[in-house]
Length: 418
Image (cartoon, rainbow, N blue to C red; front, side, top):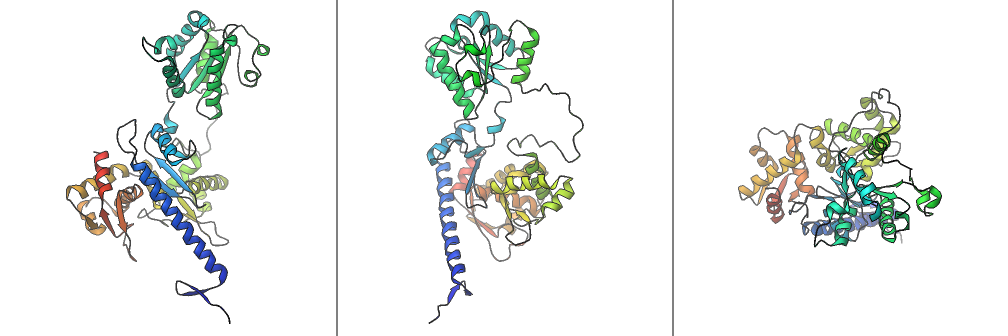
């Protein structure tokens, strides 16, 4: 007797049946993870603002979850802790913006404080470099350990004065251990400044990192140190950039230039800001942007891994298209509106009218000056935040969804953004 397998009313073979079961199980598991992550995120108050932060949980094409937040790095770290994730798995929009003003933790021996450390710190402060110096930061009654931990946690550069006195100090070596750990984690740079000691005098570890000899009474060497801390370069001036290289908007520090250009193309060429709108090939984007094809492919890869675009599974085609999450992420950078502010405006209207639910076609009448492209972006922001519950039917018209429900999360969103 032959067995016949059916799925969704269609006849399928055994492999298709089990592949479908596997896909559904994975979808259910990912949906459960998304719900859990949003629930945990909603219970955390951002220590930097005292409010709930916006959190987006997105699926990537590799059946993984990508999490990003508009909250502070401290909020991202706390969310990671509660979810049991590794540090850095939750991307905070301000993660890459920290360190615009370099902050140096200056480790040194007490014997070198007045002759070397304080004069150097004062020179750096005068050149736009913030400096943590124990004499300035630790007051009467303060906890020495807590103050030092705070300085170390906030620094972008760990600088240690390596002198005949300091290299023998156990306390300085403990500070060096912490500075090295931050270097390994990518949290700050490590710079040892040798004054009166040779490389051979240093520990085996310090001999493996950059520890230049400096004369702190030499203005040119201080200028070189300041330039290094500020990220300046000694290279000769660059020639003109290729025409396809552009500067990213200031609010996109965490994205490669290639990803930003691909995202800009999709954002500007989308009619309604919906999934599949538009569907393009890397070659088409490369031609329009004047970008080498390989660079476009790398930009696409960045956006795929972030869960913002999808690739076709048609053999022989390399087309891709945006998810709604891409517009949530990039619209405010490339369009003439801010979808975050628009989302707040929509949520405020829903709450102020005490609505329980509304058809999007009716909601659009409340914002007559907004085309569907703009309203869709605001709705996608709210949906990505789980601030509304949405419903879609066979034909949504120009909208991303057909109807939405107002929930307690809508009210919380309004209060957090009031």
